[in-house]
Image (cartoon, rainbow, N blue to C red; front, top):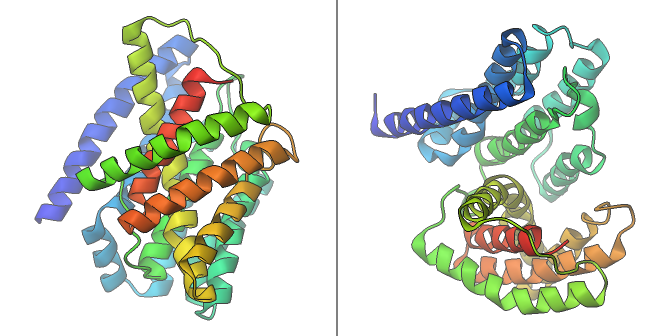
Length: 328
């Protein structure tokens, strides 16, 4: 086993152990029987395996080099459908209509860069297509739950995130966007610096527009620290990872080249970033979209300074964590 594969297996083993323990504990809290716990846990472990895979450049390069594009896309589509089937079939929640819609979405995303003629139109259309199911909130309707209060749409959201990332990195072969789950020391510093730059501006704008208000969370320090850490890394590796990949990783440099101006790329990307937040807490939430667009400017400046998407990931995750902890 070569070094990159050993590293992936090591990360996967640690991830499976931690998720398995957390999953069993959560199932006990909910009182789920074993016949429900096993397929649900299998679905999440499968999805977690593919979610972290794009972080390993050696795996992406090997897949792109060894598999013809059509076979590669077919495998990608199969991996995307597997978690859905892993839990809906054993627990009797499989729905042919939902599965057909999901399969159509997955096949379109997987084969996009195989079938579509290369160029800016296909690139921008792909980003719009990948945003649509999330903005329309399709996954809660497509991923049924066997227990009230247990939301399984996160399976679809995680699948959709890594499906798009893998397709762009291995089938579209976009390079030099700084993709990764763990920032370098300089990227941590850069992201933290632009978080500090935005914080007073964002808080002032949010309070003035009535988007946020201060709140005190009554937690003891150990619990508050654990909650803050869990919130931050959840934001970093899901929300910030996906949004920064498309906005600062792809759109900002593409628009800058299209218009021949870094400033145009920054401002247009920030405006689009604000617009996709219109549905937040009731459409159209223009006030929140304005604050989000303002935040996008600072994330974009972090991207230009660091030449990658991981510094804006840090700034983005810190902003979301602070807002979640101290504002309502």
